[in-house]
Image 1 (cartoon, rainbow, N blue to C red):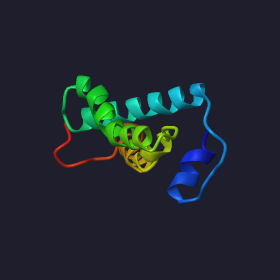
Image 2 (cartoon, rainbow, N blue to C red):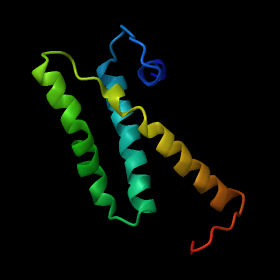
Image 3 (tube, one colour):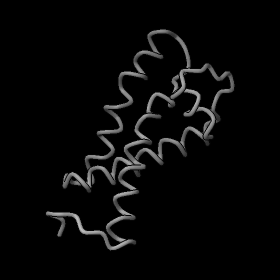
Length: 103
């Protein structure tokens, strides 16, 4: 599960295809991460699903046009964003950090 996105981030070709369950889990993780991003940007949480659909549109169209399987690993760089959001959450909620302008 972790090897595929890491291989995509390092521009290595990994030959094992993800199973449907792994793809569903990866998309669910991205949906949770995009929901956290929407919450942080004070956008309604209902926009997380359309954001995911828009982010997947070009990779899906490219895979369809090239007659190959869709690679969900194209969303791997967003895990850096999710890590930053998680670190911010830990800093504010767990460590009691002070962020100017945060209510």
